[in-house]
Image (cartoon, rainbow, N blue to C red; front, side, top):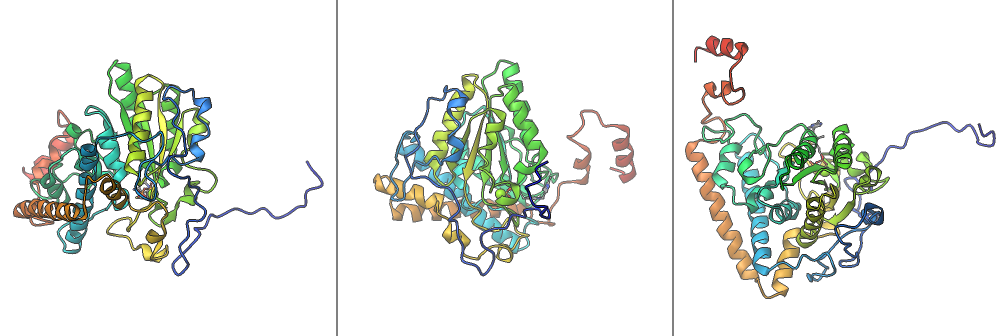
Amino acid sequence: MNDDLPDAPLRLHIPEPKARPGDKASFAHLRLADAGVVSCPAPTTPEDQLRHLPHTLVRVLDDGGDARGEWDPRLDDTVVLAALEAMVRTRVFDERMFRAHRQGKTSFYMKSTGEEAIAVGLSLASGKSDMCFPTYRMLGWLMARGYPLTDLVNQIYSNAADPLKGRQLPILYSARDFGFYSLSGNLGSRIGHAVGWAMASAYRGETSLALGIVGDGTTAEGAFHEAMTFAAVYHAPAILCVTNNQWAISSFAGIAGGEETTFAAKALAYGIPGLRVDGNDLLAIWGAARWAATRARANLGATLIEFVTYRAEGHSTSDDPTQYRPHDEAKAWPLGDPVERLKTYLMRRQAWSEDRHQELIERLGHEVKQAMKAGEAVGSLGASKPPVSEMFEGVFSTADWRLIEQRAELGI
Ligand SMILES: Cc1ncc(C[n+]2csc(CCOP(=O)(O)OP(=O)(O)O)c2C)c(N)n1
Ligand SMILES: [Mg+2]
């Protein structure tokens, strides 16, 4: 007991965002770093020499659109063009499907606007047999791997051609052949699966890695920390990613611990490397993913990567962000827009032009429209449903007595 301390009443600290509706948007508190200033250690570097990395920011693309520094993956322009196309396809698709919700064609939709580079970068930088355990903002992973747009639309419309047969909420896709593990609406439930899958890959002597993705808000769940423990203890060949888009619906990142330290710094307590990366910079994302993959493939275990980004639009079709944050907060976001930044990079390399960009948007708009037409021909929300008998199939290899009784009751 220290008698010198006054008996002040105890109180809790309740984190509050820097700006609410009506206030001037500000990100002055955000710790940034210039592009190219963080050196890239060899991926085999022992963890105790990497402990500065969670407190800085790996960036490659500078404000003028040039690539800088040691994290630059030095990709061919053709590869970067493919990434840009997948990012734009994601954005165009999101726009159209959001409108489709307003037109009553689907019950629900979520956009990943402003976060497209993360999903696309991880998808293209990963191996074909690696498995992503995604969040609902990882549509870009599928877009980068050529997943058919009509299958997406049919799933979103919950129609008779839905590849998931009406079992999942719209946008909770599942596409094993595309390295996309089935999505769950229960936040955090997949990060442990990612680590378990990675452990199984190593246990069997295989070569595939797992990528587990969670949002900033989801790191506050126990499931995240259990997964981190297993990943660290068993040196699981996993890349664990936190997409810190500053918000978890209407809760700002401070509520999940984002003010006390960085999300990348959670790695320190587990003794695994933590990288804090510009999430609106395709090249930095690629460089970081490749670094973590090289480390995992060398049996040096998991890496945690925080992607610093911003959720430029509402949480979902059920959300109105003007109720809890300044209406122009997206404009104040200091890391810019991932599509614009990549476009500028390619234009500075004479590999792209404003005209070609507009043509691309038009071509992709047409592709999405065609997919929507095909989906609507089967039926949009309520107009066509998978047969009720589907409900009893595809889950158990042998139906148990309850299913048999229920099916008999329905007479199907
Ligand atoms: C276990 C669980 N708790 C709460 C919810 C409700 N919920 C859905 S999304 C969301 C916010 C998630 O925020 P974050 O992890 O930052 O991801 P983001 O939406 O920002 O990508 C919440 C609380 C849920 N789906 N599952
Ligand atoms: Mg979030």
